[in-house]
Length: 421
Image (tube, rainbow, N blue to C red; front, side, top):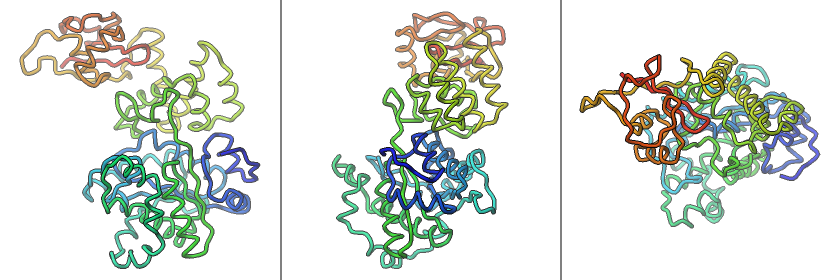
C-alpha cells in the first residue's frame, strides 16, 4: 500500500514496519484509531497442535495493536476448523474430529500469552472460540439469516474459489461455505464485543471484505479490514517452511535452539525486514543493524535471533541457544544444548558398523537416505569435523566423539549430535 499520512500511532507503526498490504476504509479506520480504542481480531484455525512462523506476522499484528492502546481479540476456529479454509489449497483439508480440534486448540493457546497481555481491562486481550456461535445455528436458520447477503456470482470471483476452479480441482459445497462462516464471525464479534476490525494475510482479503460488507449491510455499523503482504523469503520460499519442515512456535514441537538457528540463518536480504516485523527493536536500532556490511551482518542476524527467541521462549533460552551455536560453529566445541537425537545403532540386523548415509539420515537434517547420499556427494556433510565424500564409509560406535555422540554438520549452519543407543 502506498504511503499515507496516518494520524494514529497504530497505522503509522504498521506502515513504517511493513505490515500493511490493503485496508478497506483507510481514512475511517485511521480516524477511529486516533479517537478511541479499536477492538480488532484475527482468526486461527486449529489444524495442528502448534502454530508455525508463518502465523507469527499475524500474532505480531495483534501485539502492535495492543502496544498502540487498542484491544486484541484472538479467535480460535473451533467451528471453522470443522469445515477447513480452502484458500490456497488444491485439495480439501482432512476433516478432523472434535477431540483432535480441541487438542489442537489447547496446544495453540499457549503461545499467545508470550506476545499479548490478557485480562479484563479495556485494552487487555481476550480469546474466544467461534464454535460458541457457529455450532448453535440450524441449517435453515443460517441460510435464511445470512445466505441472502451473499451472491454466488461474487463468491466465484474470490481467489480462494476462482483459483481452485481454474486449476480444475474440485471444491466441495462444505468448503464453499467457509467464507460465509468467517463473515458471520465478524458480525457476531461486532455485536457481542464491538469488534470493528478484522486483520489477516493478503490471501484472506476476499473473506475479510465479505465480513466487512456483512456488518455494514446488516447492522449499518462501522467495520474495517486490513491485510498484510504475502510474506516470502529472499530466496522466494514461503515464510516458516524449510526443507526440514515447519518452524513451529511451541517448544515441544521445535526446540528454542532450532528456533534461534532459524533466525540466525536468515538470508542477508531478509534481516532488515524480519527485524521490523518480528522484533520490538526501535527503528533506529534496526537502521544501525541494517547498515552493517560484510561479516558484520552476522551480528545483525544474531540480534534478530536473540530478539525473536527472547520474545517467544524467554531471555534465558535465547542466551543458551546462542551460546550453544557459538560454541559449535565458532569455537568447534560441543554443548549439551545442541540438538541431539538417539540412533538405534544395532537395528533389526544387529549391525556393528553403520554407513555415513545412515548416520546423516538419523540426524534428521535430510529427508531420506537418498537425500543423505546427495548431500554427501555435494560435499555438504561433515561427521566429527571431517568432510565426508563416500556415503558408504562406515563407522563403529568407537568412532563417536568423547561424549559418545557423532557430530553431524550440514553446511555451515546446522549441527546435530547423533547418540548411538
